[in-house]
Image (tube, rainbow, N blue to C red; front, side):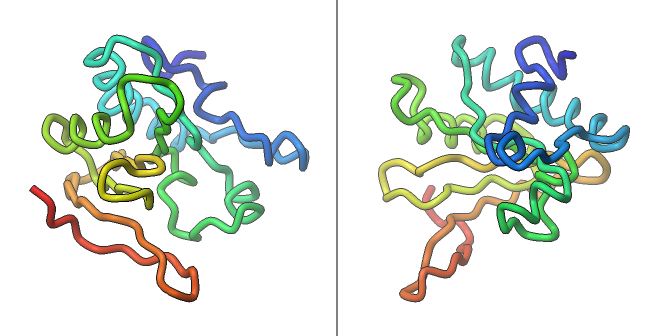
Length: 157
């Protein structure tokens, strides 16, 4: 099944953890509809702009999978509304280029520069709400001295 021209449901739900642990990672009706909106409004425009395959490191996470990986109970991944993109080691575009393309061209709910350094994030998290207004919130994920994750509002123009 295709969520958009260049994104399959299998690619969006792929998880080594789910495979190893025998966890069903199949989205239900509402989550599937949310995934289609995310694919059409976020993934497909990125794919078409750069004209090459875009690697998803994390897409949909069922409640059981999200719990198994220690994800947030409010994760938009568990509603089919979020995707993590990681282009490291794949040439162009870089994670930085993907981040700025989204920030400057797409309507989104949240966009997060995930760790990395000031030049390139380790990956890019982006979400699109199935219902309601998109917040266009841009954040940067960091870790404190106790290795706990926290988020700062993006202030880099």
